[in-house]
Image (cartoon, rainbow, N blue to C red; front, side, top):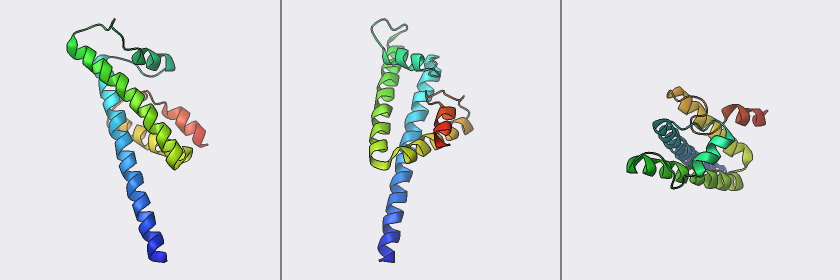
Length: 126
């Protein structure tokens, strides 16, 4: 019985680690695109503007593709965090996002570069 519990715990830990790496890569790509496009994602209105990626986009084809990718990744992240919250719970999901944000900052990204407000996440942890 104890072996089954340990096996289940290890499997759950490995799954959470994979989910964490997935959210880290997603947030890093969002931050890189936003930086390359010189797009701020610090405020909710900035994110809304990025989601409105329409025909009035400035720049050439590459710029347009990057903006469309940014928009798609923002939508994807919303779906992923919604699923994580449903399957793992709000606390675990919040912790995964906090960890991913801290890692981005250690890699040199400015706070909020990917549209996640670390201070707001940490405040909900208290």
